[in-house]
View (cartoon, rainbow, N blue to C red):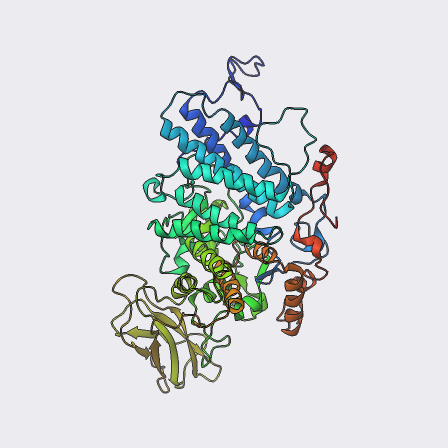
Length: 632
């Protein structure tokens, strides 16, 4: 961050004072909401405080990306169900759970701070454009916090001003009213921020015009789905997705993996990342708050050791599912233990390794059991070394990526009643995402490597070097897999191209496998993509295309806290999770050595009550007008 000062507590009513001497209890000056907001700088600091709230531990620093989103068909916790205190399993939380309270309390704190800022927005004499920028961002943040509340709790109180001390009994508004208010806030923000772009700002952890438009597309998508089912809103999804797309500001990063490496390394990718919540080193005024848990519970297993400063801490309490792993297209001729995938996202999202430690070094070890693989999207190994040493891990959280906008457009177009089959525009949008997934946005990459002669005399402990040369491209690397008989049985691609202009392949490169100390040299051949592997069948029905979008969202956005919400808005959450439970049982999830029985036990007994979180007990005791959600 460029500025570490926040005033969250100030805006909640705390008085700051300076004292003439130690323990002097008589303040010589003080700030309260009544005498603050007097300058443009004070308005900006107030806005920074609202931003800062978003990456607090009980918001996107941990709870909103882990505690109630990590038990789905794409990932499952691997911790014991009995005694689990974090609420990760549906059976592990009730209205009195502390993290349930947090999901309610912290968004309302952000809303209250936004309301106070908006009430005082006209106090200082200042540049009107800057005032409009601050107001637009505050309106967005208020709408976003209501989005958190209504998608988790359903009907909640709609508070648009700072309540008086006695105003505690506030009835919940309907979800329709909440969506209408979010729409109004965001449309006003769109006007106020119309020339504030992410490219002009230079970083993506503050709200800009395309962030507002992308968020409007998202709320319309949810509005159109369960439980409100206002299907006429699909047209609005397309309108606002097109505003983002046609702005020319955003495009996909050609290397899917680099998106998340950038987040770990505090590097901005303003083309791909429309909005991210900033932790340390990001937007001006957003504080560090001792770091976050991104890449910890949902991350690749590792333990920090002082003798190896390249090590890091990650608990990996969540594992992938076989359903996710198998959703990526594979090479049917692959001889690897888990067949190689043509989709480069699989081996990034599904980490087939972990880090073990000995007394002398950290060791990267294979993890081939699919149900036990770590979620690999957020990899702390890419964080700066000083983060690993102090444990802060200030990875920004991805809020809206450009690929999400493309997939929202594809889904919404397919749902429009004027189309009896998916329109070409819908295919174009989803295929753009798939093209990046297969690495072929700007050319062709190495698709697969086939061993033609396994040779002899090799060591599985020290497999031979594999060299990829020629073909007009650069950057492809691979490692050999050797069996216990000393034969090369497969070649695993680690990188398929450099993903920069001039590195793509025009013909199949030559594969050279180093000779053994004694024995015969193995040989292999490569194939490259042809640029069309990613294309969907252009003759899908609307039902088939809808399923393709669902699958693509899982493959692209897994572990980004969207899957559970997607399953709910698609209207079949309970049945979908029941079907997944049956699938998991049939695919050996309960195997004591290769499965994830804890994860399986955690998805038993899901009912309609789990579509929403319970309203917190403390709030029900305080607000007598509030009614508990069904089933709690």
